[in-house]
Each structure stands twice: as C-alpha cells, then as structure tokens.
Image (cartoon, rainbow, N blue to C red; front, side, top):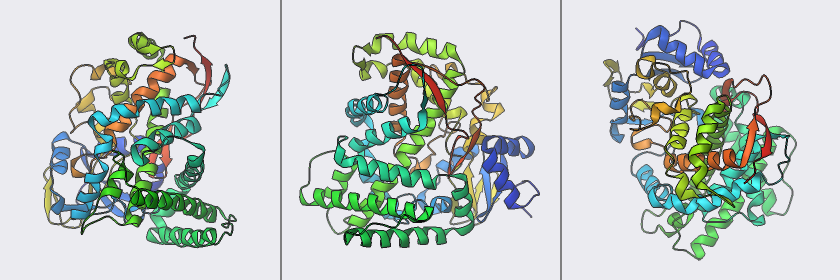
Length: 462
C-alpha cells in the first residue's frame, strides 16, 4: 500500500512533467491529492511531500538523529564532503564556522561591496539597449560573495575564479544535467572528479587542461577553481587574519577536529555555487514580477526616494523600507528557486498523521506550501502588500528550508536582494520585451525562468 496518494504513472513521466512545469506540477498534485502526496522521482524513488503548516512544523522540529540528508540530486554538483551531505558533529562544526558571516551586524559590512559589484556589472549599459539580466546578476552576486566568504575585494586576480566557476555552474545547472544526475547518480560525480583530478595534475605540470568534450571542459573549470581556492586556503593558513569571513574562520579553526584543507575548499565551493546562482535566479524572478506590475515599481520608488544618494543608495535607509522587504518576501513566496529538500528518516516517524517507515524519503513541499489556497487565498497573485506588518510564519513561508539544515545564507540573500532591487529600480528604467512570459523550468536542481530574462534599460536621472 502506498505511503501517500500520488499519480499512477511511471516515475519518468512524473519527472518530465515536473522538469517542464515544476510549479504547475506540484500545485496540481496538491489540488488532486491534498496536502500530503507522493512524487515518484526518476532514479530516486518516492518522496512523500507535505504542504500543511502543521506537518511542516513537525518536519522542521525533528532532531538531527531522526533524519538524514537525501539530496542525492545535487551530488553531481557538490562534493560528498559538502555541508549539504555531512551529518552529526561534522555537520554541526562546519555550520558553526560558516554561519556567523551571514548573520546579524555582519551583513551591514557587505553593502558597499554589493553595490560596487552591481555598479560594475551595469557600468557599460547603453540607454535603450537590451540587457541580459542573468550575466549581470551572476557577476554582481558572485562579487558580493567574495567579501563574506573569502574576505576579498573584487580584483583582477580573482576574475579567473569568477569566470571558471560561472562556466562550471552554467554548464551543470541545465535540464539535461538534471536528468543525467537522476539517472547516473554517483557515477556522474565520479566522472567529474576523475576529470578534475586529471586536469589539476596537467595544470600543475604546466600543461593545458583538455577542453574537447563539454564534460571535460567542466572538469577543467572545476580543476582551475579548486586550484585557486587551494592557493587561497594555504595563504590564509600561513598568515591567519582576524577577519570574520568564512575562509578566515575555517583557517583559524584548530585542535583535534581541525577541518582539513580539502574540506575547506569544498565548503567554499558549496557557498560560492549555492550562494550566487540561487540569489541571481531569485532576483530575476523579483524583477520580472515587478515589471509586470508597474504600480509596484512606482510605490517602491516613492518609498526609496529618501534612500537615494548622488552615488546610488544609502544601505541603512534601504534597510528601513518595509514595502521593499515585502516585495522580496512575496517574490520568494510566489517563485521559490527550490522545490523541496528531501530528508530520509532513520526510524519510524509519523508526520501530519502519515506513518513513514525508517528509510522513507520525505520533504516539506515548498511550492505546495507557498501556493496553498487555504493559506494565501489568492496564491498565484503577486501582492507584496500581503507582507506589510507581521512577517510570515516559518511553517508557511520556507524558501530557505527550515530546521537545523536551514540555508546558512538566508539573511544574506534577502539583504542582497533588497539592495540590488533598490539600486536597479532607482537607477534604471527597465521594461520587458513585448510578449515575454516568465515560464518556470528546472535549471539543474533549481527553478528559474525558462527563457533568459532580457530587459530594455535606460538610466534614470539622479
């Protein structure tokens, strides 16, 4: 007997339907089968999904001993030593070192870097020309992460790191790679690691890395990124700093449980990969939604007027803008970039009245929770004003997950989104091309607009 109701069709067809229309597919599952339903994912089996607030609350309250990560889908992108896959004390240690640079007062120190990165990415924009948002947002979000993760300012030395990492991520975060990861699983990661190891050996000998097949190019991209990060880790180990960035905190960590250099490199990679593309996709969604409702932009500009300075915007004043924060929240609700983060139970559990035997894969259904009619009334409408006043409950608003594995960069992402939107909408007039439709589709394990977002951009008078 199935654990929960679900579509009586093969996993391959369910996965194809999800990949083509992820929001619509998971919404339809909920409408047909209710808040608790089953999704058969190709190559990985059944995942029991929960959308009701009470069930989500139960999931996020589970102690670490009762569940394990089941994020095999992203294993083709991240190393097994990534915090995404670690368990127990290792997971706790790595999180403890990674979290503080993305929390509280630390965020204020990143504002100049975020704004400089965005200004650099838009410096060559010509009035009235079409602008591809993805590369602009990717560059801005990556350069902004340099300070929080590596304690660095953008400089020519780090441009190869950005270019190689973006080439690797853009090659891996595609629909074909999503299906390849589901089918090939760990074999795909093994091939990538072998290719990267070979490329690193060649580069260390002063030889060029092979760039024949697409997968070999991505292995070479990863090899160059890892070599640059290994160099940085070695430098910071030799000359520790008192900086609050992630690299400095890992480098200063000593004792019998000191994190190895290899592990530090993999955690830096995790943050760089997960921290820039998720935010750039979320920003793309937010910009599209705002451009579809010009009155939202008008209200934003009215609120932001006191924050505008001759050189851009005042971060402290931007932080006081309640409607801007509501725009960020509503965009993350309507268009979450992750559908769910599976877990595996270590013992028999009961969630939302559904019994889950040990070993069951289950997850809080982000899209189901965010598009739930009983919670939102009109879930498909973009209405930032719904978040003016009290913030949403973590049991109904979960773009960053929840529980002890909640995304460490959640506050940083929200802070960065607010600054970028404030600077873009006060500095530019933007317009979508006629007929553009923001259709969601899978980008690897993330969800973004199916077609690259392009806008007509003109600078606004300061």
